[in-house]
Figure 1: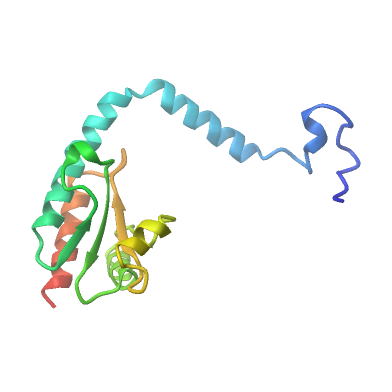
Figure 2 (figure 1 turned 180 degrees about the vertical axis):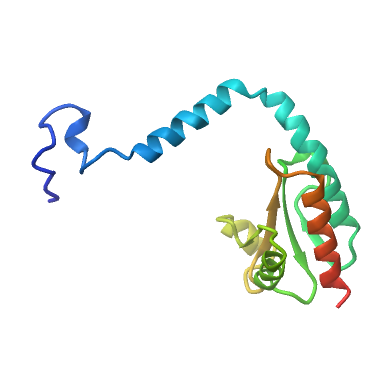
Length: 152
């Protein structure tokens, strides 16, 4: 059994405390709650969709780039999984990172789907998403960089 901190209370929620409360996380939760209360989620969804549409369209139009998942905006969140012919997802992610573009490679915890798509052995997919702080210039930078990978 794990011994509790001797100074911790014997009753109530503080009996589970292992030391000083995590003040940073408390402040972060407060800021996140404030954001959710103050932000118009429908407006945010419209903004994300407006920025995501050119990303999805641009990837779909790029030769040698395969977009995995629905190809229409109405059927998806503003996140896209894609692969680039002749490159592993890790290689693509590293090339994009070198240009200060943050993406993720692998299965993104969607192991069953990646396996059914036959992408496990090649390393999964590259995943890019749109959030509040991503703008049109970021999308153009990503698309230009991915297209540059294809022209090598």
